[in-house]
Image (cartoon, rainbow, N blue to C red):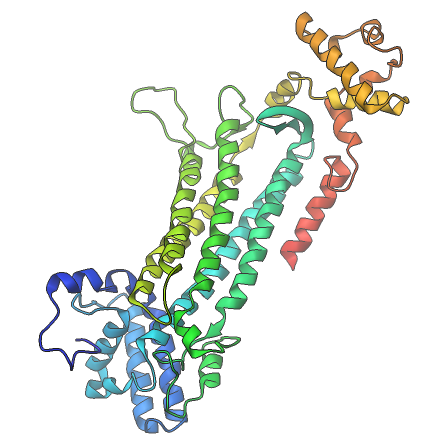
Length: 457
């Protein structure tokens, strides 16, 4: 069965059919195609474009097809070009030749666009829920570990002490931006293109506002040419997903590093590790490594669709068939990665002892020592130089700040007093960072409370 062909003298070459057919992947849109068709036939009957009884029969037939789909009983015919053709064929088994009237006042162009929008609108909601679930896990871990101080890093070098909770909340707010971006994207997805037909609209007296309301759209696409050719909303979603995968990849990279024997900051549950085929002792953070790698799939999908669109003339071109596979792989990769990371983190444990040990290496409170001098009236640039000399001295002596005597401190500046010990402790350093968004415990608690309000809204 084809929705076209009267002007052709021969059937498509089998290779050509296999190359151009989209049913193997767009069958995933079956439920959305049925929903769009039900709204369309209701409108056709309401506007008297079809007889009311015909519209009712078509709707009843489509409901039977939908029920069979829900039960997993549908057997798709591989000779069908696409899901639109296949749904009409299946409808024909229920209502006979009347199924041929389903396509009245509609094109596959606007039909494909509405299927894609219905699908993506639902997937955005599902993915935003998964982001929220991951954020809840980060919040819970942040609240539970407010007593753990760890090294903060810049340039992959130990920099300053921070609370583990603040580190986790940094990712919370990264994922909040992802959730916000998807909410904005959803607004542009939530427009109905049905009624645009092939590109110019239709001469039938349709009621597209009725169709949009039936399908839960917030409005109509304002231009029929743009309605069938627009894939900006897909590009926007792919870009948002790519950014989200960057954040997941960054988090997973830290999990991989933190789980090494060298650091030992985190221990993943056995259920989230794999072993080696030759080395019995290995516990590999493979799930985190795979999330880190799968980000590339989403980046590739974005570049792929941008390349398809970059020189496309108005309006619909068959090139647009390539939008679906890029979208599907992105939806599956992003949604799956979010779930994996959430469950992996929820079952993980953190080592306060290993983090405390790491704080004793690398002179992480050097800035606090310089700030101590500044509070005593020394210019910061001079203080920076003095503490740099202290660090060099300690490295030569193979000691840490906490092992220095007061006389040793004063050999570099008479300004140093007995209270320097309070400033150079990791706990004291953390307590002092009370600027908004800082790592002091009260500030991190504020961040957690802010996070709860964001999730509540």
